[in-house]
Image 1 (spheres, rainbow, N blue to C red):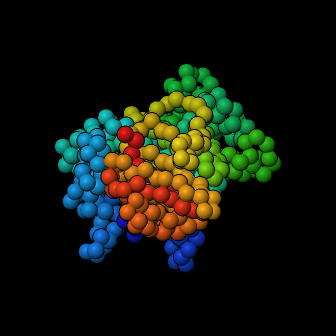
Image 2 (cartoon, rainbow, N blue to C red):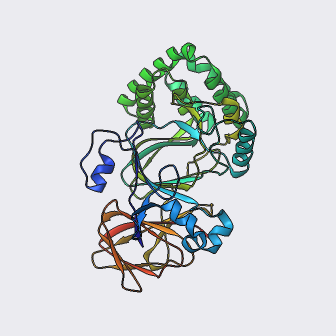
Image 3 (cartoon, rainbow, N blue to C red):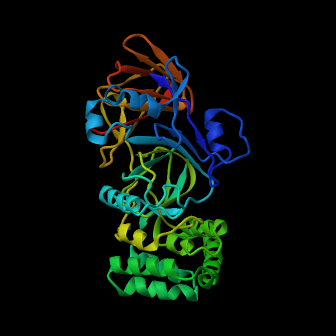
Length: 400
């Protein structure tokens, strides 16, 4: 068992207080958006096995089979295939999608062949991997996920009474749904920002007014008005209105697969994803937006975003089921004095304590105590571990 020293990412949209409060540290006044737990070379966790702090990816590179297990190395190569995070949003993240594995490989190879530098602002593909992800709320967590049915969005736009929205509402009603969603998103992203800014402004004012009046769409309209406050005049505000508005309660989660447009708006959560940095942005960002590539990757299907709740497994483990092999998220909620196993087997895992104090004890008698916000890496093949509470502990591993 290795206690992890984890880096904080100070993105501008981050909360100044949520992560410090969880960790029990003093806020610095600067945003603390993400706490990374894993072996991403851009910001790896550190472990100390007696030779001083060492990046986790270097430890794994020295003995991939021993640290990850033979099956994980065979399936995903000699690197930890997942990245665990605490994510604390105090402002909207960019509206974005992620490619599937085939698209990521093709995009990576094309940009490599073209000689596009990895740090170029117009580079789309930072690696050859896909980036499915799961967000589990620790506090009420607000976001956008997937397309709302086109007819419902048309009704929502009409309710705002903004003349500049009528062509989009008409499009959403007049053509097959997938074609309608594609046409509207293409039109929004292709229109000159300055020309569309007055419509965005009128829409934001109308959304704020109707939200204050209440009604079934009040919370969603308040969210769209909030987005416009952070991104005045941005066409992405109107693109965001095509998406389902979701509020997760603590313990609930969302799975974001390839091609699903989404944005996180606010709250604290545990995020688990494949170890990739491939993001295609749709708006709400000053960064590069590659509209043709984006439209190639987006899946223009509508439907319920599918809120996940943990399913009870053996030995008190509660599992968030997803269809990917690179990661598996579960949690243990342990009462005072209660004990729960956390099997090691032949797979790597990271254990994160989010409530209480957890004591990890293995079959050799070695123990490690995790307080709120602290985490540990357990390599493949390590002795079986017993967890003792009171604590809530999230477990990130692979699904093999």
